[in-house]
Each structure stands twice: as C-alpha cells, then as structure tokens.
Image (cartoon, rainbow, N blue to C red; front, top):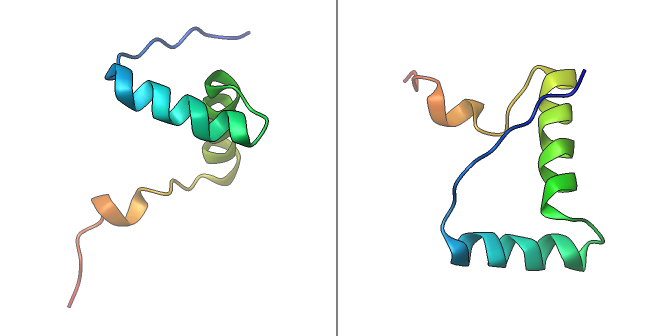
Length: 56
C-alpha cells in the first residue's frame, strides 16, 4: 500500500530542486521516493551525524 506525503517548501527551493533533478532525468517526486526508499532499506539517513551528539 502506498501513502501520500505532502510537504510545503518555498517556491524557489522547489524550483531549484526540480532543475537539479530534471538534469539527472528525475522528477522531484521520483527523487524523494528514491531518498525515502534508500533510508528505509539501509536504516541510515544522510542526516544521522547532524542529530548525534558529538563525543570528544
């Protein structure tokens, strides 16, 4: 079963992202779906280090 995800982003952010993805043969929808699928399959997020406490 698929679920609908809706988000709001600034128009210039969306347009810039659309351009980048289009240059790579993707729609923004496809890119977001690929991102979420990769995170779900790997159990890792590219943002993990941003949220982990840094130990020194």
